[in-house]
Image (cartoon, rainbow, N blue to C red; front, side):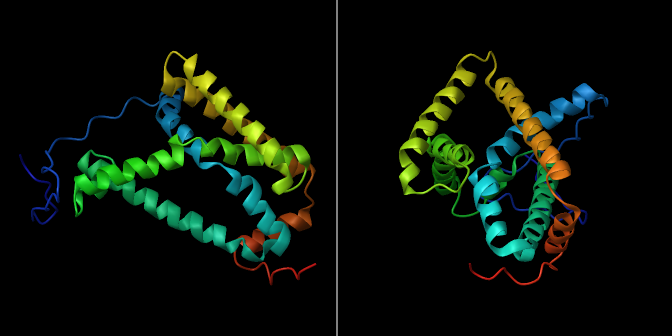
Length: 226
């Protein structure tokens, strides 16, 4: 099997997995709205999984407590995430394999990284704790404030409901991926529409200015306690 070569034709060591094959990149499908949505579809699932209580609870709570002074952290995070995603895309285009396969190529090898990533992914996505995370956000919206220990029973009930509804969506869908994709498209569309309406009709221009300055690191000092 041939190994991937750089521009200087120096062979690249394949790490702890078999060497790469060489082949031409397949031609992209013709551009159309339908094909574009098909390509974006898996990303919608990933985006939906990444939206959680951090976006709906922790972020707003920090902003409410400290004002726009810490919004620059989000800007740095977005820039770093963009750079990471770009490099992961380049790796996949160059090798034809996902970035996690590239991670597994590193030492100590797949016998270590494979089980570790499986456990970590299960704890992140497979474990029903994500339902409680969603339930925390739902409960906070329901009671109109951040949740406390007194709301544990309500959070638990919402967690059960969220978990059961998610199972029903998957169970009655002909194709799991397509069902998840449609559910995520609906959720993302609803979130964007909700935020757009709130931002346009419930936020005054001066607040927009402070938020914009905060993203640029010009938000001033955190608000004093009390």
